[in-house]
Length: 244
Image (spheres, rainbow, N blue to C red):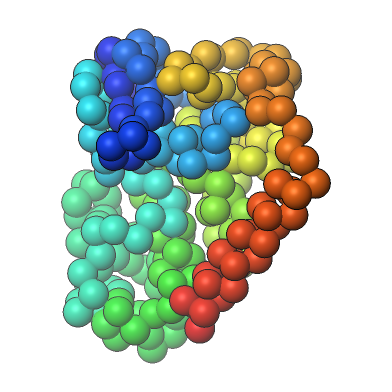
């Protein structure tokens, strides 16, 4: 169980401050696979980072009565000058996993070859995310945390990594922030809607989708859609340059 006790999270500064969460009280079962939905995708990612402890609440506290993973794909916590092998061993040791088994598994599934014993800083961002994904699922947790960028990246998993993810989905809880309804319906059996600083849990996933649609902002004008597409193209181009 993950318990939120009067949790508030404020982001932004000055006149741009806003509440992602506002005095939220909630209990998230660790045995369910929960899709996190909401009108602001960035807020659902912030919610995942809060659950992981990567960022802290502005007020209140989060009690984790379960072994909670770091978000799959998260790039923090790695030491650039150390080899990939040593970084993997460090994370496995940090979370109390069998270091030798985790290192051997990640070495095999990541398919990094000689790069596994070279400095972590030498990997491209895309390979770093792949490594983090595989490392997260190689360690046994009660609850796995995923963000939408990793969910979409799941399509590039090799067969062994995909099989591991699907195996974890059958035996562990998951909390997934995804904009992909198909993925959520495939792997989730419960929904959480984050809107207006509050969260609402639904045991029925379809009811969560219906409620999320009600909280969605009004349809954008043609000009707004065109501007949004332009921003997305710029982001994709920037991301592609970073991964080169």
